[in-house]
Every structure is written in structure tokens, then in C-alpha cells.
Length: 552
Image 1 (tube, helix red, strand yellow):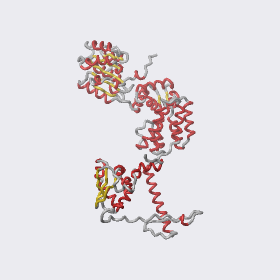
Image 2 (cartoon, helix red, strand yellow):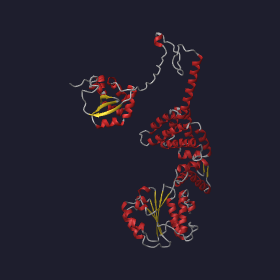
Image 3 (cartoon, rainbow, N blue to C red):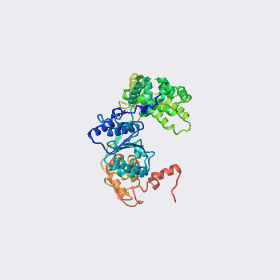
Image 4 (cartoon, helix red, strand yellow):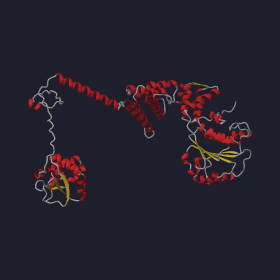
């Protein structure tokens, strides 16, 4: 019986074209090999299981291959065989987590001085390079910047942000991407065909999505499924074997949401708990479920939804039952639940409460539609009012100008006709035009407080300034007011025109407000008509509301 090798090792790519989902890296490296523009240091960064170490080994073999084929290693020569079997003296793989100290880097600096034994270059692959200490990085800097001509460094890391900028600036950096689900699915289908295994389309898609962008994780799940289910694997067997939440359960949630079935939603939570599903995994799948509905509703297409053709059609049908605003609010609610589950003491209680909130979430209404409905209602009411006014005679003679409609009012029991007579707003009095001549000093004195109130209503800050002034004299068409300082005088001067216009509205005569700086005196025009407490509205309010009295 031959030794069993896991899929990730058995089907490791042997040439650059076999690397899945990283064409932007492999094409660049092949062009560099063909043109002889190979750098002395490369940095491969990206998530786990996307091909960083595999690509590093391919590059190391291609550099030292005796018979390369279009920059690809032939995997048959002695140098390639030694690399594949891990016994090459020219290609050394170093684990950065185990050899992270400065002493190991010093030993490496001594070793790079020696020429390669068989190949063209000595290649050092340092995996998880971010685990090196600060001192180790510093010891590596000079060698990395000016290495011997026959040395090539290849670094791989999943945490790029932990590397010093001095290291980054000395390497050519390649960012490996998460592999799309569809490409992982095609890779698994090819492996299954080569291994004479039978997996339906739903099972392959489920395993590919379980990898979450990592081909190695998906291949590990693939091995587990084959071990549990045998050579023939169906979608239902995958769900049972790996204890994965069925997609149908998420559609049951949206069906309960459509009918506002709170009891049904709580029953789904109970089923999730009783079957032993991970609540975090369930709510994560529900987030993706609402994301798919939201994307289809907003974009009008299911192309970017990772699902089989059958489920894509169901998503399209379900998305048509909900407004876009409702789907967006549901997505936000379940996303908040997903973020909060890791912090709560009892995840089930939190999930049940949020499921009830989801089922009772009020429907959203577009503002534009509300405004259109209001316009239609106003038009309808105005039309009915006009028809009623034309069809019936008014109970009393309306002597108001044309265009003002009144509706009959029935007197309430126990009230006299005088009390229940229809209300008629007084006719607007014509605005008196400013009269010619000078302001009357007595009128200015008697109505000065009224004038200040209007100033305060129109300009709050200017009203505060005018409260500190008092009229001094009326000289022709000039009303002089005393100000306590230059600030008040400048404020009045800047607003002189507005104050004059308001003065003409109150007194119906044109006059200019002229500030005069000086201390307050008893000889002002309003000295005999108003006390200091009456001049200040704050003091007046204190007296009125709290019964305050001025100090003797």
C-alpha cells in the first residue's frame, strides 16, 4: 500500500501556470527570468494558503534548473529533484519562527559568502519572516542590500505590517490575493476528476466557500470530506459530515421575515442550537445571505453572488419581495449582531433578541414617495373643499376680499351663536407709507421700547447692543442715542441703514440713528418713562417670574 499524501502536497503546482489565482505574480517572475532581470531579494505577502511558499520554490527551481522550459522548471533534472525532495544544498528553506534570533542571522551572513555547489545561485527562502527580532533584521540589512552576486533571498509573510520599512525598501514586493471561490472550485473539480472521485456541483461549491479564499484550507476540507463520505460525495453528506449550516435555513429566515413570523424565527434559532451549529458561523452565513439579496436588489444582477445557478435564481426571486431600504437595514442589523456575539456572555440570548428585532423591523418608505403622496392628498383635499364651497351657500355673508374661502361651522350644544360664529381673520391693513417731516419726540419716547423689541426680534445680537443704549435727543431727522463705549457705537453705525428702515416702519417717518458715546444720565428722553429694571429685559423677567426686587 502506497503512502498517503494529503492533497495540498500531492497536487502542489510544478510550474508557474499551475499556481491558482496569482497571474500578476507568476507572469512577472517568468518575464524576469526570460529577460535576465532577476532581483536579489523578493518579498511575497498575503493570506495563508494562497501560494507564497509554492511560488518561492518554483522560482528557486527555475533559477537553478538545468533545462528550463519557457522559464518553467522541468522538474526532471538533478537540481529540480533535489529541491523537490528537500535535500538541495543550494536552496535552503528557513523557518522564521524557529530561527528568529540575531545569532541565526549571523550564521546566515557567513554562509552566503560561499558559492553554490551545483546550481547557478544560492537561494534562501525565509518563511514567516515577520517573526524575526528587531536585532535580527538589523543584522540582515547590509547583507540584504549588497548580497554576493550569486545569492537570492525570498521572504514570505502573512503579516506585512510587522516588517521594518528598511527591509521593505530592499525587496521587490508581490502581494498575493485571496483566491476567488470559482477558481478554487475548478481546481477541486480537476483534482476530483484525476483521483476518480464523484462530487456534485453543490458539494464542490460548499467546500470552495469553506476555504474562504485559501486554496490550502479548501483542499484540507476536501480531504476531510473524502475521508468521511468516501469516493462519492453529495451536498447533503457534506452538510452532515462537516456540520455546516444548510443554505435553506437562511431562506427560511427571509420567509419568516416576509410574514413577520416571530415564532418561526425563534424556532430557527432553537434548531440551530439543537443541531450543534456554531452560532458565530450561523450569523456569519446570515450576513452573507442578506449581502447577496442586497447586491442583487441594488445591481439587478446575480453575477457577483457566489452560489450555484439554482440558488442564484432563488436569490433573485427573494430579493424581489423586499424593498432596497429594508434589505439594507436588515444587513446592518445582522452585521451588528455578528460583531457583538464575540463579547456577549450568552450568545443564544443575544441571537434570539436580535432575531425578534429583525422580524419586527418596520418597513422603510422612500422620502420621495411620501412627498408625492402628500402632494396628491393636498390636491385631493383642495379639490373637495372647492367643490363643497361651490355647491353650498355660505351661512353668513362673507365680506372679505375674493380668494378667501370660509366653511360653515355648526354651533356646539350649549354655546351661543355669538361664541360659535365662524372665525374671520381681520383684513390686512394697508401698510402706511412713511410721512414727511421729522419724528415726534413724544412719540419716540413712548414707543422706544416697542422699537427695541422689534430690533431684538430681527437681529438678536444687535438687540443686545441696543439694550445698552438710550435716546438722547431728536434733532430734525436725526435720533441720537447714547452708547456706553466705542464697541456699541461701531455696531450701531454698521447697522445704521437697517435701524433707520425699521424706525420708519414703526414711526412712519424717515430718521437716522446716530450713536453718541457717553455715560448714562438721568436726562435722557426716556428717563421719566422707564426705570432701569424696565429697560433690561433680563431684570424684567426676573421680577416677573421669580419676584426679584432691586437692591436698595
